[in-house]
Image (tube, rainbow, N blue to C red):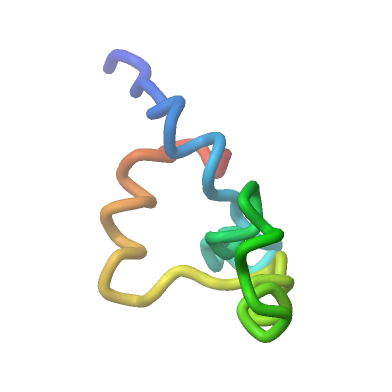
Length: 67
């Protein structure tokens, strides 16, 4: 059987934990931070957010080899 291709866009955005959960970074923390409230900025601080269960199977299909 041929090797499966990893989706490169998904590889940059998601990673797996040791237990097999899909990890992502929160949005809205890249640029234009001067215009955002401190509350909005602190809400986006969490780097280890996990993907919702409904999306997880689709992302695992894009990352067939555990990233």
